[in-house]
Length: 227
Figure 1: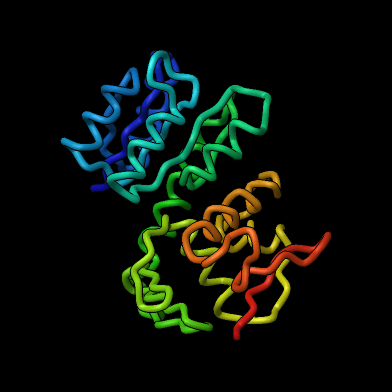
Figure 2: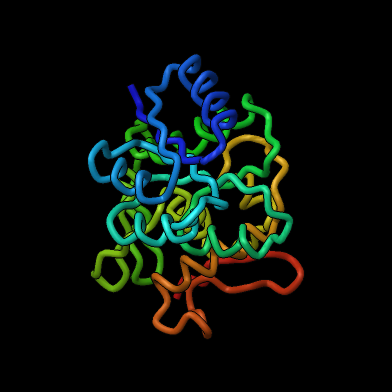
């Protein structure tokens, strides 16, 4: 049974999330603040974190930073903030997806399932090795090496990189990359892809400001430039 850690200081939110996630077959842990969240992550090692950005004290962005120093556990952000810069910062820090409050609990369950499916995709029979330029992607283990050095990526980042690297020189629109990342049709905003790409470039590119692997195609999307 997969364990989901729900982090929110609003009891009605945690109760609703727990009810629907438990009904979907997950074990659910609750944390009310950032410090409790980090303690749960270290002690329980959940399979996924549902994390509110607007926590008191140690906020969701701080928690994401701390978690990403130790783990690539999938993170789905909850946000009631209208400023999309918060979402972009969260995604750039390594969150996998986000949901804006108020949200449908059924959508929350669907997002959790989709993100976990990405994390588990390596166990599928069609797992393979993707090689492009000096990158190697092991889809059986969700591992990336660049120039022989291991690169830590999240499940979402891996899925996007694998989609691009598997078809070098093909131009993907942001909408196509959203579909590849989510695996299901979600209404999401395409700038989320830009945030993920920025994070991937920071990890794999020798000079992220002058990328040689993932190139931007103006007004269209991105492509992988296989040397």
